[in-house]
Length: 284
Image 1 (cartoon, rainbow, N blue to C red):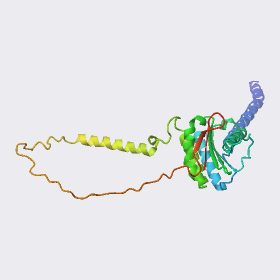
Image 2 (image 1 turned 90 degrees about the vertical axis):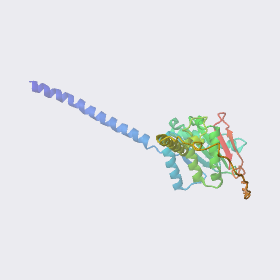
Image 3 (image 1 turned 30 degrees about the vertical axis):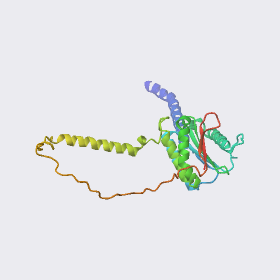
Image 4 (image 1 turned 180 degrees about the vertical axis):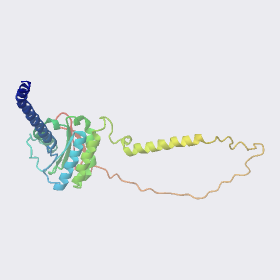
């Protein structure tokens, strides 16, 4: 009788455990699918409508931008254009302002495609029409981390590369510099020499050398005799003093001219058209 009851209990509970195992398996596969979708989502960060890059160069820059996104959670975007017609916006009467409006329209399109979770962005907009204008903007958290001064510094760093059509170097420098600047607290000069790793290493080496030198000096015996110990002041005196003219030596130094001027296309300006002051641009 007891064996029959146990058999009936097992018979009733078996379908329940079978259903539980099936549900657990389905939930596991759905979790894997969701994780795979989030991880493998292909984010495009280089939009080269002006065809300044080859396919391999574009892929390399995409990989660079992705690697910095994985480290910082920030998107470093680049968009190039010759017409400013790829996105819809209200045109103004000034091409520089149109470039900023175009950048804002591009940013809006980017968020519509990927969502607000990718809203921490910097955008380098390159206008290769007759205007030849470069614009940098910071969005969301990067609006404060990349202020007017820092945006202008970046533009000055890449301006000569853009003028020489060395776009790969300009874009690479932009991505790396923005990533370095965003790590430094706002209000601090990101190019301060005290923030340079090589300078910090040099200071450490010099400090260590001074400390070791002091330790060696103090470990030796102390010298008690000096120049006055054996000097007889009553019988010592200067017997003779002569002055001899030998020669005159003259050197000439070439006067250097300042080659880092803005004659290649005008200076940079900051402020922006949106009231938030998150745009800086320059001609090249």
